[in-house]
Length: 305
Image (cartoon, rainbow, N blue to C red; front, top):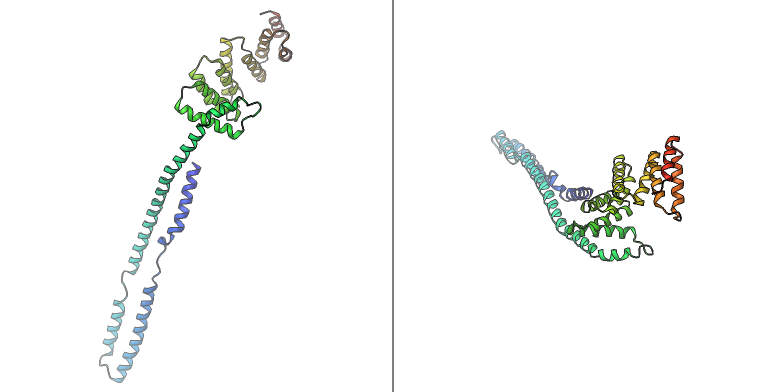
């Protein structure tokens, strides 16, 4: 939008400079000179008439003077102001018409050339899609730059316009959105992937994680609901349990946090290095509970799966 405003503004400035003379009231230099000459001739002739009258050459000098005055008046255009006003109105009409004409031509040229250029750029970026997928294999040693990630996202969008039911590419676009810190892009892409494959837990888990990181309480509640839905289908999903436990602790629901970390402790073998961290988190949540809740959860923890 701001681009078009800038184009319109620049066009108006150029037109104003180029066509401003059309708005100016023309100076009637020739007419002014003519009027001055006529007046000079009148006064010179008037002096001659008076001289000739004194010499007795002219019998009726008053009549001659009246004829001179009439000739002077006849030579002055009666509608000079009207003509000038009409010219000014015509100049304004031309000014507006030329602005509209130049603006229309500029828009038509940009629409053709600009759209062609944009399409060409999109096609070029789309052709790099396979190369971006290959680069992902070396992401740890040769990570994509921010510019390349943006191009990757653009290439995926172009491809998804042609293949809108490719859930894996929607999911990939969501991951790129997270990498670019573009929450809206990630949200829309993960939502579309989960919509296409509602039974895919990985899609729902990534979407839930994104929602929990949002500042909006509504998003957090939606993310928590997604996590609980995942856990109901797969109560051994460690990642979903971990996210739910930290989220519960963050909002000071210490009982839910302790219960969730307790479930995770049951899933981990004794030699798993993650168990120490989970045990510490469980005890931290437990310390914020009442004695009754502590005893209940300690008993639950001691039970074997």
